Amino acid sequence: MPEILPDAPAAPRRPVRAIAAAIGFVALLGVGSWWAGRDLTAAAQPTRAPLGGARLFDQVVAAIARKYVDSIPPDSIFAKSVSGMLIELDDPFTSFLPEDRVRRLSEQMNGTFSGIGLQIDIRDGWPVVIEPLVGGPSERAGILAGDRIVLIGKESTKDLDREEVFKRLRGQTGTSVTFTVEREGQRQAFTLTRDKVHLRAVQRVALLPNGVGYVDVNVFNAFTATELSAAVDSLVKMGARSMVMDLRGNPGGLLEQGVAVAELFLDRGQSIVQLRGRAGTPPQTFTDSVPQRWPTLPLAVLLDRASASASEIVAGALQDHDRAVVLGVTSFGKGSAQNVYPLSNGGALRLTIARWYTPVGRSINRPPERPADDTESDDTDGVTLPDTVKPRFRTDAGRTVFGGGGITPDVVVGDSTTPQPVQALARAMGKNLGAYRDAISKLAQQQKRRIKSAGDPVTRDMLDALFDDLTRRKVAPPRSVFDAAGPWIARSLGYEMVRVAFGSDAEFLRRTQYDATLQRAAQVLQGARTPRDVFGNLEKRAVTTVPATP
Image (cartoon, rainbow, N blue to C red):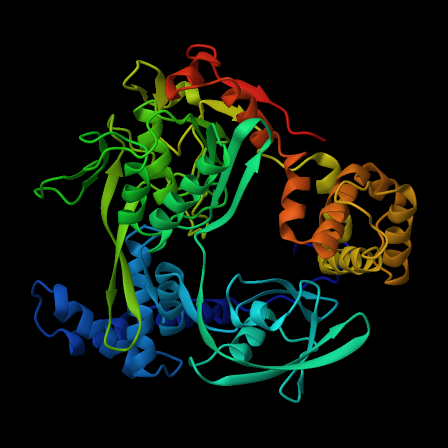
């Protein structure tokens, strides 16, 4: 009896010979496929011999160029070969840099570019001035924060992205560009001559209450140590009795500038960092060669998850020598050094040439994270190790510090995760987060003439107006989600209102009220007259956790 499939008609019976013929045909297909592979192999390699190095590479490239199912231009094959080779190094910091990235990297490290000196963002589809750079052509011409750039030449800027705007505004020094801004409903055209614009490494210098000086170092470029030295000198003259160096968000930069910054605060002869290259090469140790400038000035260093590279060299050296107390959350963990080698096509090879170690021998390199199935991943953040398994070291004064994945602060303060109500708001907004930012910017502009001081509160009516605008844009989240995130929304709106009305300095002072890490640093520094006094305010070998202000 034939097998009957449920709910299906019976299958017709097939002669035995037909089945046998089908099996034979399939077998021949398999054999033919195997013989085809044997023929190709024999043609390419008539005699078996060791094959490797350049010959292996050449033969694979030739086979792909002649035989691959899709035609691939030779230049593309070599580009893919380079990309694959660098990926196989399993090093996220070794990479090929195309010409445009080399240019941007050079501008960042040299601290200068040719343009008109504007920081912009895209709001409601238009480029809006966040801040004109100090000393640049735009500041000299009177461009203001909040100005909307509506035309560049005769071309509308509607729906241009930031990169497209920058391409149109930047150019050779001495050339000119005409653009039109809209300010409070009125349009005004400007023609500016492009000039060399300095990108400040020290973005902000401020004297906070109780004689606490504050310097925000946002990159280690060619001018960082010089700018920082001048900033600290000016704050000391203004009456600063202690100092906060903010390295949060600082991705690093030039190794020699990290060394130079550490030298400002260490004594002659103290080690700063050691580079260890490939096996068989001697290590290179950088040691302080000059006396420190402010030997009695108590110092705190602030870190976050984005503090990396040269930022970690500075923090690690000052921590190991008990020169500064480190606060914040564990840093990025980039414990390697790269050189950039120019290539003939205008690009460059960024290549890891050493790993670096702090004065007490710590490697803070974070192990790369690997997916469970061992597939490729673009994640360069790596694995976060708990303190219980991190290697332990002793500072000059005998304090315990940790290696094995970033600089672990002496005082852990601030949330390393986004608050749940803010996460819920972000999920609810989804792809409409840009519209949310646009609505906040619009409301801040509307409040510009109504706000009387930098401390004015954000009212319930303002939040209602923001929600109504989101509703009109048809992007409003559920009201319950909006209200739960209300304190954080009010904070963001308050920052934007103060920036638009009074400038970025006033915005910074408002932000300090909610900056748990900075507030804790000021507490730790309070009453300290020497660097050693700072550690007297801390519990021996303890890590204090302070929650972020809601």
